[in-house]
Amino acid sequence: MVNLINIKNDGMKQSLNLSLLTFSIGLFAWSCSKVDSNTPLTPSKGTPAKVANVTVRNDSAKAILTYTLPNAADIAYIKAVYDLASEKSREVKASVYDNQLILDGFGDTLEHQVKVYAVNKAEVASEPVTVTVKPLENPIWGVFRAMKVVPDFAGIRVITKNPARFNIAIEILQDSLGQWFPFNGIYTSTDSINTAIRGMDTLSKKLAFFVRDRFLNRTDTLFQTITPFYETAIAKSDYREYTLPGDAVSAWASNRVANLWDGNWEHWPGCNITKDEGMPSVITFEIGRLTQLSRIVIWDYAEYLNSGRGYYYGGNPRKFEIWASPNPPLDGSWSNWTLMAACEEVKPSGLPYGQLTNEDRTAGMAGFNWDLRADVSKMRYIRIKCNQNWSGGFYQSLSEVQVYGDPR
Image 1 (cartoon, rainbow, N blue to C red):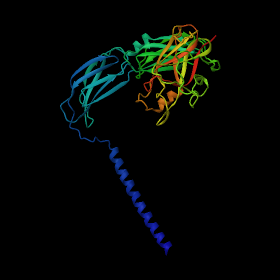
Image 2 (image 1 turned 60 degrees about the vertical axis):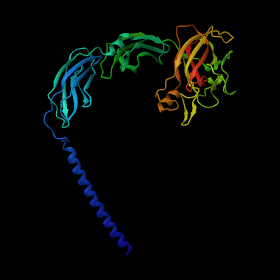
Image 3 (image 1 turned 90 degrees about the vertical axis):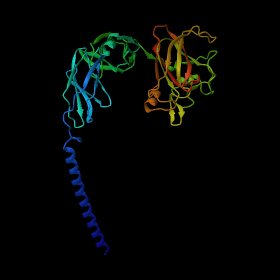
Image 4 (image 1 turned 30 degrees about the vertical axis):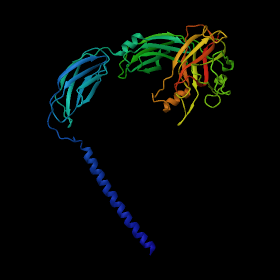
């Protein structure tokens, strides 16, 4: 009896499931037929009127159009269609809540014909209004003219200005047996570009440089043969503490300055944390030999936050100075010290104090690379002076350092 009932129930379930499946397939097919019809959601009220009173303001690599919208309730947007120097057609749109179109992407200063349309909610376009624009010079050319490329330690340095803060790429190619291949690039919108590209040997290299924008407009090419300077990591086995009068006191006996070259980038007590004594905190150490300094990498101590370990927090230096001397006075004065770099840490995310992204943590874990002056004599002693940490005080919490240069 029980088995028969189960069989009956199973059959009813199968029949019901089959009916539901058939209904679902039918409903899906009906929905698809509706979608595939591609008919406007709003019926057309005919061809809309044209925009009026179009004015042109030419700007760097772009032109700005202002206009009067047609007096029609069903206008959805305004669009402009024009050709770039690459002969590619570009289309830009603006909503009916604005009376301005920004036409960008121009790589020349020639005249361009632009057709402006009003488009209604049924996607019917008006007759075009044709205007002529003549954009001003693309900022990539100013960046190119100001660009200088010089040898640097274990690489090259690209220096230029980008006062318009235009979004640019400086593409770098390298010659190999008469063929040019992509080598590296700088991608930025900052106004002052001073970027080192390292990891090169000291052999002469034939390099080519040009500037482009996101529309692939590009400048002429700068060709240059460059021989990078020699650079090596100064062995940490030669580093020594060199405490001078006025230097900061470590907050704990175990947090000595010598911890900065113990190979421990993260864990307590392998760090140096100074006391906050109400004035800039200074630590001093020597690297064992006179060296033509090139840069220093500083790893901040990963402070404890509510969300775990993190950077840009507590005693991590925010604004600080790096000084060097070949032979410092024993009284702790600054009379024979040279300012090698004035530094400021910038949090990639820009989030408020105590808030971090994965990008922030990654940047902190990688260490901060600070370029040092190359126009001074060889140095042996280094001072780090913290003028302001991320909590607003003066003490500093560091984990590791690595100095680079030419000790030969």
